[in-house]
Length: 349
Ligand code: H2U
Image 1 (cartoon, helix red, strand yellow):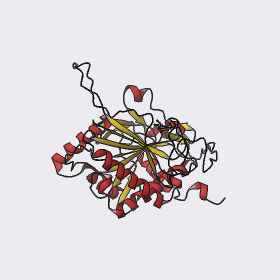
Image 2 (cartoon, protein in one colour; image 1 turned 180 degrees about the horizontal axis):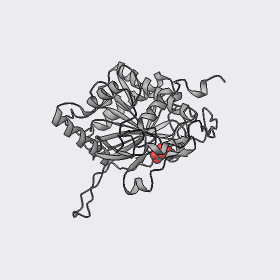
Image 3 (cartoon, rainbow, N blue to C red; image 1 turned 30 degrees about the vertical axis):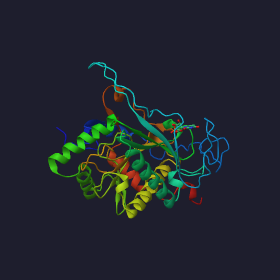
Image 4 (cartoon, helix red, strand yellow; image 1 turned 90 degrees about the horizontal axis):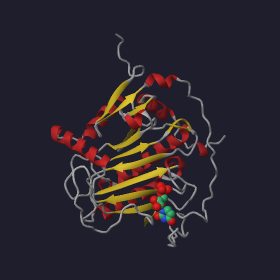
């Protein structure tokens, strides 16, 4: 029998955050693909677009005018998926369960400049974004009916983002959403068993092995998780064990903004395109209970596979059975590590 080699042999890896498995088929990524850099249509955008509903001073579709903002601007989503009203709970049965859900949806513009994205912003401007995330988490989370605040960004039309203006969203709600509930259960079970943070232990091992670490600074590391499903999925993990963004010190906030820029610059440099992804922060629920099991982290799920125009589809087997990837997480980390931290648009030809 052959000796197992994780760069050769199909295998499944366990995600200790979700309790799910992913099928890894590294032998398939031997198909030639490196060097195939199909440049995407990088259309130059104006710094201000009079038609954009997120640009400073412009009218939104409901007739409200945006502030003449100069850094970060947060507003209530005009088309919220959740409403603040309390309603009665209807009678249900085990096979027809239903729970009314309350919440608040916000939109956060990262910059007044229509043509910027996170990797092209100054670290000082990203510190302001992080400060706004802290303020929103604190304000929304302090409401008695808000038990979870999901901060996220959908970047790129391939991710369904409707507008290139740099922005993210915040959905605050009364229940723990499914993925967060799974993560919470895993973190709690580990903490109760070991008296330690699962992600602190995981990061200690990753920093020692160095195989999947992409970049690090004094306070954060970016890894391609051992169990990553998307080809270039990464996770920012805080080196100190704390639960949410409001617990970051000033120095940590600076380091967080810095690493956010560095990883997204690498992403843009991978295929010399404005790299699409969905990113989001996972942190302590805001239910007022102590949550020592939580450990601040931020996920990046980018869909691109081989070039600016070749997307990984989570379809077929993935929809019916289990997530699957070809390129190994170690190979992805190696590729990301090797990329420049100078944004390709600023390089002189
Ligand atoms: P996405 O492009 O990531 O979908 O985010 C845009 C959000 O902005 C979306 O949730 C909201 C949409 O509801 N929006 C407004 O609140 N007001 C508008 O005038 C247009 C879009």
